[in-house]
Length: 109
Image (cartoon, rainbow, N blue to C red; front, side, top):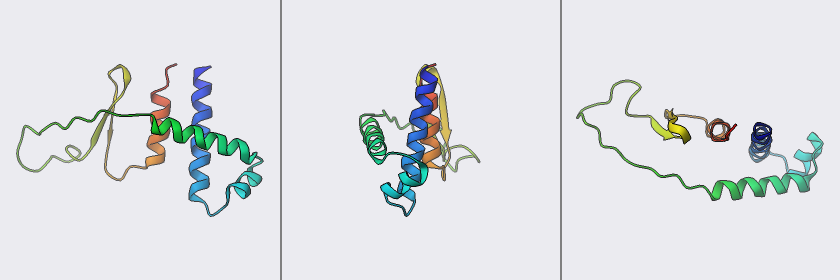
């Protein structure tokens, strides 16, 4: 059941992102997809509130070595998740893809 919930949140996160990147109004976007715009606005508000309520602790760790970082190291950001898991995010990542991935990974099964 929880997995289903994560899929619903991911679906709406993608729809809200798609609409904001399109040139369509919410009304036109929803009409094209058979959605009620009131439901769309409700989900948009839920997503905004859930994103605003999250805080992430960031710790800066100084490098032990001086000089240039080796390829693939030093330019990435490590995101530590629940249960000791982590992600390395390289420069140039797709923010929407990362949001979707984090929503799935942070949802307990």
